[in-house]
Length: 268
Image (cartoon, rainbow, N blue to C red; front, side):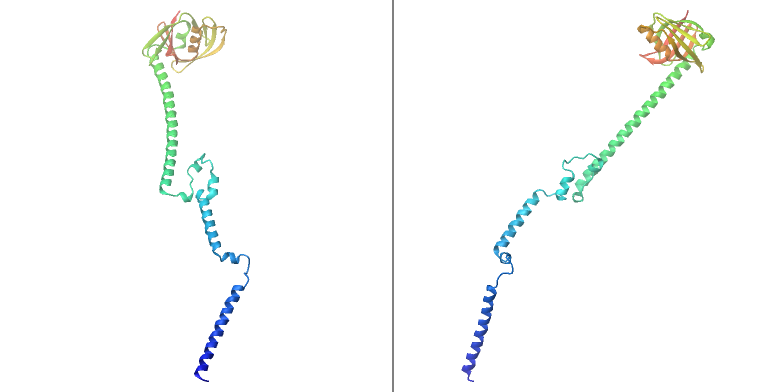
């Protein structure tokens, strides 16, 4: 075979190979799509659609973004805190230094408020207790000081005593602020009974205790339309604490009312 024939043979072979590959490519283009979306998915329209859809979804979800999405908003829609647990609870997503510090300050202020209320209650209780003890101490002091000025026996107490004054004493030593009593007297019998005569008549049972203590209990009364003075006398006499007799004068200490705590009576 000549050289010219060999060259022609090689050219024919190249032409046949080219024709084979060209026909194969044409057949691939002519193949039908695997499904109805395959053509759409490989086209430029799908990428445009996908990118626009992604941007739309992202734009709308960012408007209402919360630490826990919709669930976080529904937990407390009114944003009101009614309990201590809700007040100081916070989501893990909000664990920032300023937020933790603010919650710590709120908790600390709440603890301080509780402490202040507790201290106030304790102080008021102590003041009330001290006042009560002070009143008891004042009464004891007045009765002791009155006794030093006279006598207090059941025998000396018997008889009739006429009301003279309402008065006041701070410690039992000095008596002042005397207001006159216009009428009325008592009769102390030897049977443990005291009769009080004013506009009405009242009957008391008397008990003497301690050194000069006295307690009276109302047993009966006519008590019809009593005047103001009689009401004041009966209220004072019914709260008697102690007494003393100085010569012809009977002093009865009673629980203080209207800046008065002493009844002054004279022997009839």
